[in-house]
Length: 112
Length: 110
Image 1: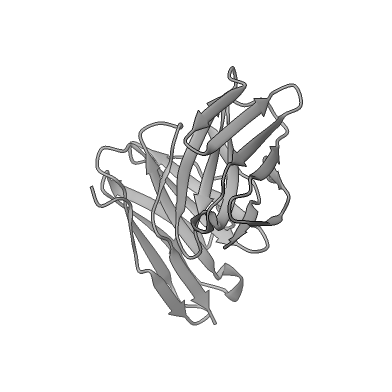
Image 2: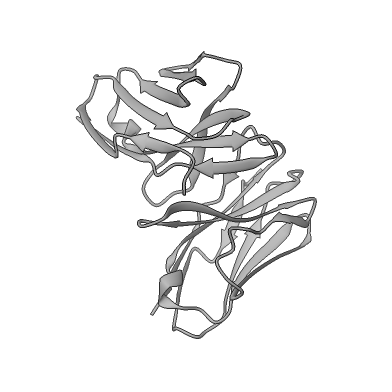
């Protein structure tokens, strides 16, 4: 298996633009997680899905952030409109159980 | 606030020495996990210890868990330059909530 795949790897956009981050989990994994990592706040769980259903979105910062999982092999995290404080590395992770999470390489987002 | 808090924030040692990192947490947990993150990469799972276990080994890694003190330690023996990375503890609370600590930056000098 190729592991968790994220795209793009780097994204630079201007404030106010819409940003869409994509994730393909490992085949067969029924949990998918979105995290955000910054120097100031560390690694934060934004939202997680189980069998494509959002279970806990309490970490989503505000209404500008939304996440979807239309099928078992694809998820998106959208920020609209983006702001400079959204600059961070966004990670997607998947797992079959809560014993071990498999992380993707991350998307480095810069909002100018 | 973060559940797991690592100590120290940064650690610099010579190759061949042992490295010890500590993690403290606040609530009851189901298990505690340690992850490594190399610069510019995603996190990689290292080892898991369950709440009813006190010690676990995996290669050069040794993890201990003291639920009475709500703390865990990760020992890396005979460190190598390739062990240079950030190390995070993550706690899984009952009800499926996973929270990562702030991490310890380990630098192993060759």
